[in-house]
Image 1: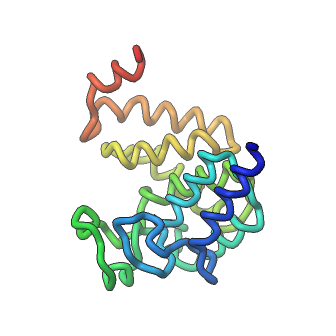
Image 2: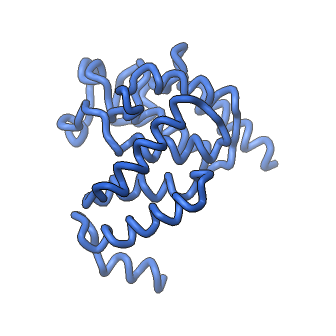
Length: 187
């Protein structure tokens, strides 16, 4: 039964893939754009991780797409400018088109989970790790991306370093709730 579920999830996510290797077609229902977007690609990779589905051929094509839309450091934006040509939910209207740690670090973590090796992934991972260590972010969504990277990065020493950065930055981060943390820890 689990094998059938894995195949089903893999087929569903792959149905959102475009010929460039990225994911689109309103995979995130608040973004009605058919072409590939980094954030939609992140959502698809997250679904694969949750289902414990791995496919090296698929994620290699995803890496090729991300390489084609990244800056020289390997960072990608939430959306490419083209996404704003289609309907978007209001909470996405002011999202940045500038490449950054969010969503790049999360995407890197999810690709490391897949076990893929790719030139873009190596560059983007190195860039994200350097940025987290040199100037720890104080925004919870970006720190969540650091958690995803730390979960799956093959370099366990760097994973520990990232977790230390997160632990130091989190109590000062915007949107951080000490009450929520206590609820999670005492559950």
